[in-house]
Length: 138
Ligand SMILES: [Zn+2]
Image 1 (cartoon, rainbow, N blue to C red):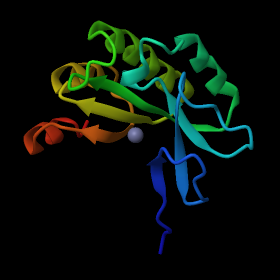
Image 2 (image 1 turned 30 degrees about the vertical axis):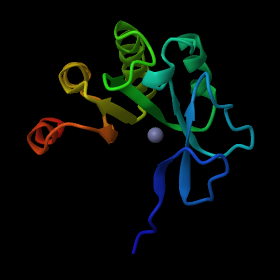
Image 3 (image 1 turned 45 degrees about the vertical axis):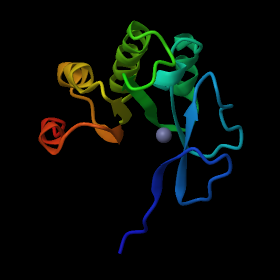
Image 4 (image 1 turned 90 degrees about the vertical axis):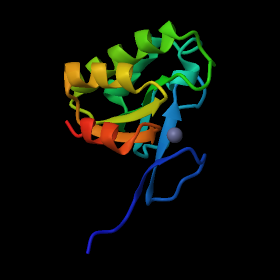
């Protein structure tokens, strides 16, 4: 039997069975050597520096995310998350890392980019229909 792990938590001090998700520009990157995922969350896309993504190449980062698009909340101008999402997909492919995708009420734009690049990964936040979900099985 395989152990279960939580592959996405925002808890500040997760246990060994949970992968902490870091919101670059909002959370500090762990310095204890523990595995984590990191990315520029769509809510933070205006304030986070995409150059900060390069630090992930040398850290124990297991996935790029949570990243994506969110048209439900207007925490950033609509065009800004799209400008930040695509370079993160490209980085994940370059580093051969999976994505943790946030897709809230932005399914067409999210799927357009995912179909363009065909990265591996999971949806963490998803607000589309079951039919749309089948579309996400790339
Ligand atoms: Zn999350």
